[in-house]
Image (cartoon, rainbow, N blue to C red):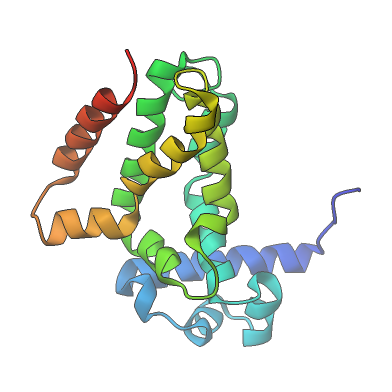
Length: 191
């Protein structure tokens, strides 16, 4: 099926909405920003925002995809340690560390995505894609029947709600979280 072409003004409006949402979320946090506020800041009608993103969850997902685009490029076609040519024993810890850094740097966005009630966070495209990449790498290290579960278990360690708890309640820094994650992954993976 050929890729659908978007009108130039629709593409421009979509980018304006994403830029406005980025700016508003940076100022207020994603939980405090309404779709009306995003539309007003972008200089478009509320209908334009809903046509482009369907709902708040769609807007949050689009922002997450935008913020993780470079990481996805590195994971799907880049060099080691993130790229597909890296040995799995090197790639798995690198993938989890990169995800931890992404969640630490974009905590409020990913927390808002995890808290949306419209769908399971385990069924969105970015989670599914990350899980598949991690499970494929793990299948080279563990029994393939266990790789799927282990990928879910390891991804749970980089959920934004856990990272938020570790920073705000336990008082850990991002570097401490990443170091503890690395030690955990080292213990879980077979030699």
